[in-house]
Image (cartoon, rainbow, N blue to C red; front, side, top):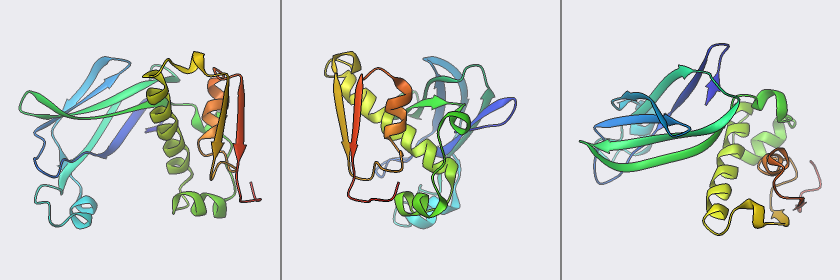
Length: 178
C-alpha cells in the first residue's frame, strides 16, 4: 500500500502453486472498488521458476483515497470462483503516525532499508493478529498483551498502541538497541 496525494496504490502479487489466477478484485471496507487480471511480475517468476504461471501473478490497483484507516482485501479468482484471499488493515497515515527507526535497525528487522516496507509489513502482521484474536473473542476481551521477539523497534507493537483497544501492551526483546 502506498498513497500519493489523491489515491491509494495497492501493489503486490498473489499466486497459488497448483493453479493460475484468471482475475483479481480489490475490496475496501467490504466494497468492491477495482477489478483486473494478473499482471507480469518478472521478480516472482525468477523466485519461483518451477511454477509456470508465477510470472503472471502481480497486481496493481489505484483507487481514490477516501479514509485514513480501513481494511483492504485482494481476492484471487479462477473463473468466477474465489480461490485466494489477502486481507490487511490499511492506514494511509502511516508516515505521520508510525515513527521511523534508524535504517540499520530496519535492515536487521526486515532485510531491506525500505521504511515503507517496514511500516506496511508491521501493519500487515498486526492485521493478522487482529483477525486471529477476533476469531477468539476479539480485542475487547484482551486486557494485557505481551509481544516478544524483535519488538524493540516497534515493527508490530506500534500498531497495537495506535489501535488502543488493549489497555496494557508490553514488549520483551533480547536486543538492547531500540
